[in-house]
Length: 141
Image (cartoon, rainbow, N blue to C red; front, side, top):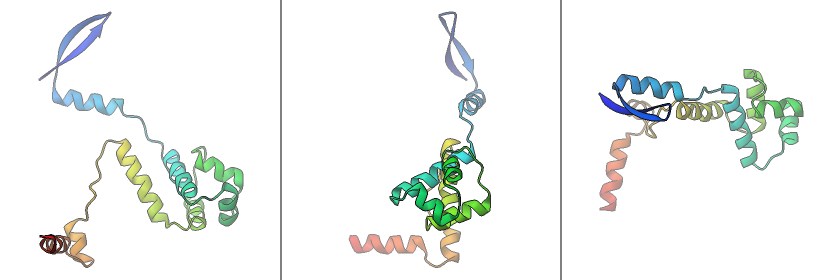
C-alpha cells in the first residue's frame, strides 16, 4: 500500500492506495491519441525539414492544396492511397512515415521504444550486432 494525499474541501487527508490503483489512475490521466493528428504532424515536420511549401508538395502529390493543409492539421483522415501519394511527393517511404507516427503514439501512450535491433533480426538479416560491438570495443582498448 502507498499513502496518497487527497484534498477534500481544503483539508488534506492521506488515503491508502494499492499499486494497481495507481496504474489505473495514470491510464485515466493519459490524453487520447488521435491518429490523424499524429500523421499530420509527421507529414508537416518532414515537409518543413525539406524546406518545401504546401503548394509544391500538393502539386507533386496531385492533391489539392486545401486538402493537404487539412491533412497536415489533422482535420481530415487521409486514405492509404493519399498517404502513399504524399509520401512519394516527399521522397519518404510510407513505412518510414508510419514508423515515426507509431513511435509518437507509443510515447503518448507511455510505452518506451528500445533503440536496439533484436538479436533474431540481426541474425536473420546479416550482422551479429554483439560480435560487431565486441570487435569495436577490442579495437578501442
